[in-house]
Image (cartoon, rainbow, N blue to C red; front, side, top):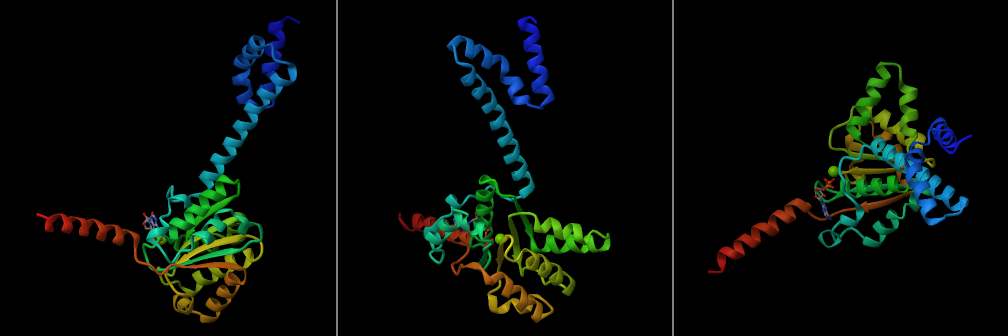
Length: 260
Ligand code: ADP
Ligand code: MG
């Protein structure tokens, strides 16, 4: 067999194994190996590393697409000085993602604009980067989806779907009143994940007022019981970050006008 025939066979093997990144890198890596008189092992390691990197990048991209995170917010971008009620060391501990290992839940409680979604989404991005399957949904979307699933006979599949991710982010619980059927769906999602997978949940309602969003105070109590059983609670009591920024701008303007 001529060199060229061997080369074509090698390309064929790479194609058959769907190693497209290695196939693409092959000519350049061969040139590099010849020029640098690299050993066979070094050449092969370099070629396979290209494929491994490409597979990793594909997996990361697919995890990121699946997660549906609504914003690029990272934990590192959170301004702790603006929100003294948030303990930076607690958030840094959460950002290590150890809480995912024992299915600990994270409850972010506070009024609008204080960064609940930002922190939950930041944890989501960290989880994706670490290779954990993550999924973001609002409580309203989750309930609507379960409702459709029930009508279309896909309840079990949908429950399995919400059971799948290692981290499930449920945003904005309590913003909209929840019908009994919606509360039952949320309850089932929370119950089936209990001890199996973490939930990061944001809500504008203090724990004491959970009974109000759900028609059934017993369901609310049972849901809280499961969520809190193994959980980290962040109670954010400060004011809205946007309002704060807005006020800072306004007062700067005023100061400027006051000084002649
Ligand atoms: P919530 O979910 O509590 O209503 P968000 O997380 O949506 O609030 O935050 C509202 C806006 O303010 C977002 O643009 C967010 O990035 C920003 N924000 C809130 N808190 C902070 C903070 N401590 N540092 C930086 N940005 C913040
Ligand atoms: Mg929010």
